[in-house]
Image (cartoon, rainbow, N blue to C red; front, side, top):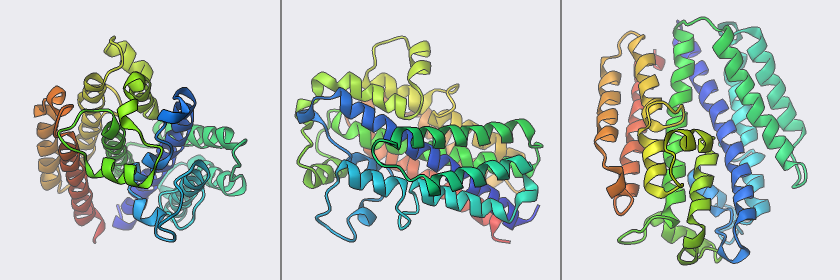
Length: 324
């Protein structure tokens, strides 16, 4: 298999996953703010931190308001933001355009159609829900088509590698930022400090009565609420949510599950020893973590370790398979 083809399929999968995850984040945040009293909402700024785009967002204007219109426009249609939904779908389409022979023809048609829809239907506030619903369902339809009609060759392995690495990264980002105002800490994290500096709406000390609603929004951001209730069967609380989304081995968006799938994908490729060692180290670090204790102190640092590990995995994948 050509390294160029492997790289394009890997990135196509990552960008498609990114577009879906971003669409769900926006939808869930809008619903969350409807459930919280106006004086306790923390607004839209946390979404900028989840996608690590705060520097880009404030680059043109350091006094730019992180209000609903600016943040949603930035995350949906800003061409200068490589992680926006429109930019992600454009990148997924471009990566697949020159490697269409590696996937079923219908998959290319679906991705091309989803990009054209997003390009031509950038929504106003009234049409936003339908737009985001179409993006989420479109991405899921493409993944279902690929799962049901693509041969289990190396190409399919790279597709799954991109999907699960992107998914694990997004899950940890959501947990890191969303927990910043929900969990007791010995001191403020950098994220807490920055968000409180940038937004006068943030009043974490007043949000305790609505903690359960916010943890539910964390689960819903990852389509995890129903599975959490089936498997945990407890009221929605921080330690249980963290344990479920970090260490559960049966939920497809939990970090532990994603690492298991990455391990399976990599083990079927040649020259995998270094990669498998890296994945094994991350799995052990994740499995050894005492999550309840992390809810009191050290969660941010722990998630930082995981994200550094994900970055190293990506670099090893690129070095091993793409630079030839």
